[in-house]
Length: 612
Image 1 (cartoon, rainbow, N blue to C red):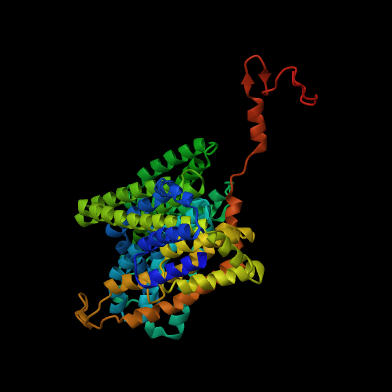
Image 2: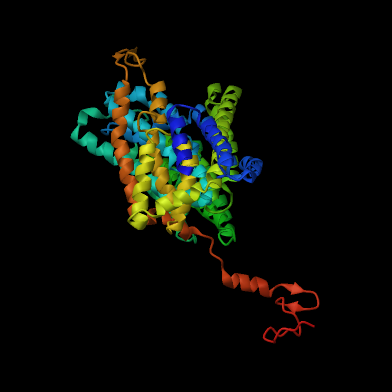
C-alpha cells in the first residue's frame, strides 16, 4: 500500500492540487482504505491531534516568522539599495564590477534576510535596470541576480536549514555551522564564473564609465588605497584578538573574526568622521578611555567582553593615529569611499553577528537569535530613517506589510507541515517507512550508491516541486535510511540543501525564476537616467541565464559529498568541558556536618553492599 500512496501523492501534486491539502487528503483517504482492507490500525488516527498539536508547539519552527520578519523589514527599509550602490561604486571601472557587487550583496542579504523571495525581488528591482543601463548581457545579469538571491537558502540564517534540521531531528545551530562554509564557497564560485566569462567575453560585463564613479577625494582620486589600509589594519587586529581566544569551530572563528574586523573599521571611520583632524584631542580622550577600559577587562572571565574591549581599544588607537597624520600632514588615511563603505556595511554585518554570532558561540538558541534579529532589524530601520530623514525608510506601512507577509509565509509552512504529519501518520501505519528504508539501504554501493541515487532523485524532483514540498515529503523518508547507513545527518542535510537550492532555478517551477520574471521589464521602456529606449527581458533569457549557475551548484553538491570536512567541522565547535575546573568546583562543595568535597563520613565505597 505504501508505493500506491506515494504514487497517488505524486499524481495529485502534478495535477496542481495545493500541497497541504494533497498531503492531508491522501493520508485520510488511504487510512480509510487501509482500515477496510485490514492493513491499517484505526488506533493510529487517535494520535493525529497530538501530532498536529506537537507541530504547532514546536519552538524551533518559531524561528521562521522571526527571520522572515527581519528580512522583510530590512529589504523594505532600503538596505539592499544602499549596499548595491556603494559596493558597485567600490568596484568602479573593473570589468564585471556590478555583477561582483550583486553577488557580494546577495551573500550579505542572505545572511541577514534568510528569505529567497526578498533577496531575488529586491535585487531584481534595484540592480537589473542598472546592469541593463550599462550594457550587461541580459542572460548574465538575470543569472547573477537569480543565483545570488538563492544564496539565502544555504547561508545561515536560512529558513530552509531550520526546516531541514527539524525534519532530520538535529540541532539548528549545528546545521547552521555545517552550511556556513559551503555557502561562502558557493558565493566565491559564482564570482569566479563571472570573472572567467567576462575575461573571454568582455562586452557582456563592462565596467562603469569613469564619469559615473562617485565618492572621490578632493584631488580626484578614488581613495581605494585608504580603504585597503583600513581593511588590512582591521584584519590584523582581528587576527591578533582572535588568536587569544579558544574558539575552535571554523564557522565560529569566521563570524567572530569578521565581527571584530568590522568593529575596528567602524570605530576608526566613526571617530574620524565625527572629530577628524580638527578635534583630534577628543579622539585622544576616547583612546585613553577605551584603553583604560580594555586594561581592566582583558582578564575578565567573559571572552566575548574581552574581545570587544580589545578591538575597541585598537580601533581608537588607529583613529587617533589617523587624526594626527591628517592634522600635521594634511593627508587623509580614511577616504570618502572608506567611510561610506564602512557605514553602509556595518548595520547588516552587526545584525549578522547579533544573530549568527550569538547562536554559534552558544549564547542564544536559533529561536532567540531570530527574535533578536527581528528586534535589531526594527532598530536599524529606525536609525536609518533618523539619519537620512527619509520616511520611506521606516514607517507603519512597512511594518504592516512585513507582518502580513510573515503571517502568510508562516501559515503556508505550517499548513504544509500539518498535511505532511497526516500523510506521514498513515504512511508509517502501513510500514511505508520500512519499505523506503529497505529500498534505499539495499542499493548497490553502500553510502556512495545511496548518496548518488538520493541526489539524482532530489535534483529531478526539484524541477516540479519546491523546497518545502521536498523537505516535508522526501527528507523524512530518506533521513532514517541515511542514519542506518552511518551517514552524519548534518552532512546529509547540507548536501540536500545545496541540491534543493537548484529547485529555485530549474524550470518549469523554479520560484526564483518567477520572482525575477515578476519584476523584470516585460515590455520596452525609457530609462530614467539615459532617456534611451531599453528592450524588455525575455523569459527565455532568464531561463538560460540560470543554467550556468545550476551547473555550479551541482559541482558544489559533488564537492560537499567528496569533501565532507567542509561540513563536519561543526563537531570541532562542541562545548569543551574543563575537567580540572569541574573537579575544583566539586571539591569546594560544602555539606553541613560533612566537610568539603561532598564525601560522606565513614562511607567506604569499596566495601561490599549492605541491605540492612
